Length: 446
Ligand SMILES: C[S@@+](CC[C@H](N)C(=O)[O-])C[C@H]1O[C@@H](n2cnc3c(N)ncnc32)[C@H](O)[C@@H]1O
Ligand code: SF4
Image (cartoon, protein in one colour):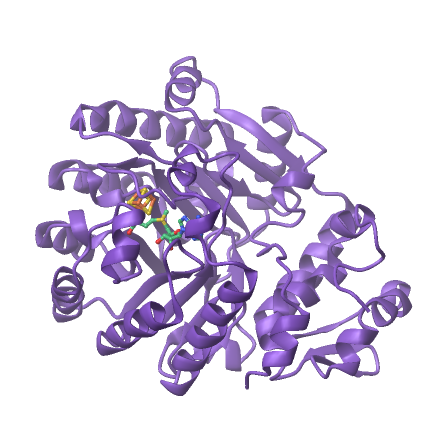
């Protein structure tokens, strides 16, 4: 249910909480040894499980809006040295974390950048390299990010034959004017062909990424885009808010603020998209993710088994995530670790036999408690709030409660149907770090 007055009142940006603390508040920087110790402790527990994320930063052309860690090149000679570095990195982990070789892999995700930048041969080589060194669980889920503009059917076949069943397809917007300014020429036909082929060979989970708030986007253009996307019947749609970080990403300075929808227009794009998705039978789970009832994530949500880690929402819960490749983030029970973002530095450190640490965060007991509360709230829509922070939480959220976005059942905080679109803002209740830095007591006005 969409209440427009509330969208206006709570038109405030808040983090997506893929990590807690969010990266800007990572302060307790562990050394590489401390990170490895923490990973060892996490994986030494009986029956521990693992997720692996592999970052492939390469793209042949730059989409001007893109906020990801990419390396733009048409020169494919970068593939072999990069795979060699990934192999060194995995070997280093196997050497330094003895429990890793007996830990079951329950999730593998290839992301980027563009994983299908790699040739067929190199794509296959990379996947078999990982699978030959790590024990794979029978329930493992393999997923991959696909850009239809550069993906060959032979690559989709390789991914399927090596165990991938989940595919996430970048669309962003089908409008020609939007595509021109974001430098992303992607036809509906090419996208459709790729989706149909993937379905035909057996991929059973297809996600489409869309963004609202892109330059030149209008209510009419986003409506047409979503109508086209609905014809493709993905079981999941990710509807991201455009993140404008032009002070970090030079390419976002190739258009001006005037090309971007203003706050009010962006809010309308969000409302329009949500309404179209809801009317087409998509349910929102967590943040920005809309799924059909038959999707496994929806089933997991209904039976309280949905989980969220660095890679997004999943039905399987691992104890640790190892991120391989430039800029990749890893996670243990009490630590985050991020790799060097610059490829040359990343490869140099590995060639010296070192894990390519850039930074990290060692979680305090309070961080762990707040992280768990956030994950529970995001994945189930409700959470039992500990006595020690209950009064403060009720006080912080009382306006949100009077607007019916949440309900209290004694000490249990529940998001209402009306409150679902405002989950990120409600989550700030457990963000100790952000709240300490607020000039007002709350992120929103009373
Ligand atoms: C790493 S990209 C990989 C997708 C693949 N390379 C492609 O373009 O199809 C993953 C997703 O991040 C999202 N994304 C990238 N930059 C963004 C930004 N500035 N704001 C919001 N979402 C963004 C896009 O929806 C994109 O599909
Ligand atoms: S959106 Fe995808 S293809 Fe475009 S620059 Fe970003 S990662 Fe590369």
